[in-house]
Length: 244
Image (cartoon, rainbow, N blue to C red; front, side, top):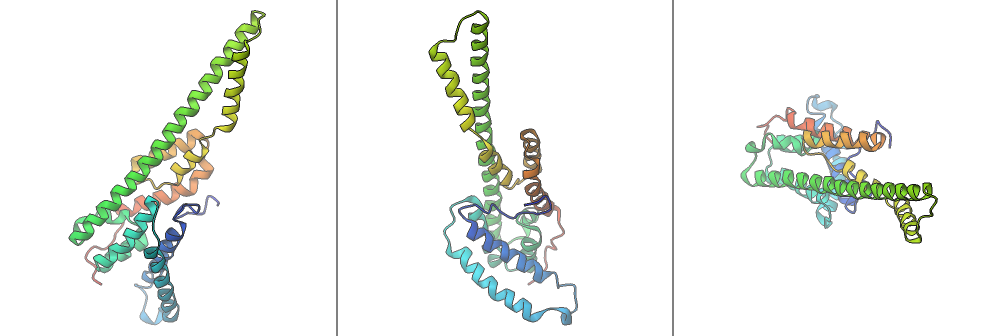
């Protein structure tokens, strides 16, 4: 992945099949809507028909698989929203701008779908809070390990300056801490947090700060670009009221 790639989801997610199928559906619908402002004779009817047929297969894959992650559950709910509220602008907003685009216009949705969109919003915040909390806990644990190592090293140096050798138990503690430092890494928690969608500008600010502070700017770049596009959807012109 390069800085110019904008990922849609974690390719190693247990729900990668669901997420991949939903992303193909979203992209196909966005492609179809891109012809709205063009004369009918310029519409590639055969291509669009083939895309529609493939979408049916992808929809079956989303609906037919059991989701085990929050993004997977969200994808299944997102597929349901345009079915419940069949106005054209809802489907187009999701296809072109993503789920956050409906948050600012939730009052214009059908009553049942308002609850679904609120649930999606809450799930996205829940997923971010979990990833952010996991990173925070791992950072505290790693910091404790580093401070323990520093204290043990200081004591060993102090003893050697006095002409004494550190005790066997102190040497063993030093060896255990060094082994723990070599084995312990919170890189997994950092990347999990980076790949989790930031559902608010505050969350995105925290993600950027952590990525810079941890030296993960290159890895975070594409995911931050995805988050910026998703958050921009909140202010997108989604044409509320556009009929089917």
